[in-house]
Length: 272
Image (tube, rainbow, N blue to C red):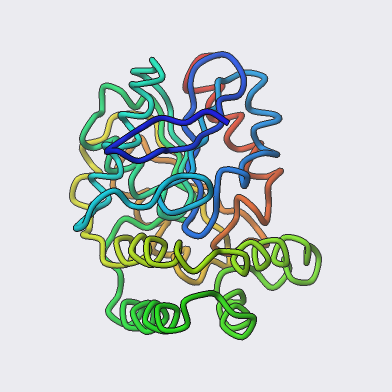
């Protein structure tokens, strides 16, 4: 498995396919393996770079404190640069949509197309900040994910239809979290805190000139459709598409829909 040293930490990633580079970012609590099925299709036309974010998967822990989405975006840019890929497209789910947008804002010459999946770039509501803060405190106290905690969290993250029609998706997600060792929890909780306490980027979005696709699960609770869709009104280059029967992890819940949307968008915008 390839990796690069960034800020004295090892960042693990997949490098699959040939063609114009596409950087694929997983959601909070996910890992690079989340993208394996979409990559089977996308890699026929594109070179797919799929990292584990800090404190996730096989990558090292967050390299410094305090840390931020902006620093994370720089670390992911450095990853692409170190591989020898100065220009690329990005598709990011949840927190990866946040650092992807930050990179597009800071380095627009390098980001040629952008996809935001279940991502809202405004401030988190005070109500949700309180909920997430109490959840992080609970997890810090317990030092691990428990069955009880996950049974409470998962209905907040996944659509009802996913539990009914694709229980293997939620069960795999749950089992992955149950396996996280104690010594990884601190970095993982810090990563969550960074996302939940983000600053709004909405005022910067009108300046983006690259083609941008915004995808939202129709049952996303953490990032409500109305909020996500409102970003599409800020820039004529933005296109919004709703993903049916999906919650906050649409890229896991509706892999085929997401893959088809990405394939069509990238082929059109990158002139493949």
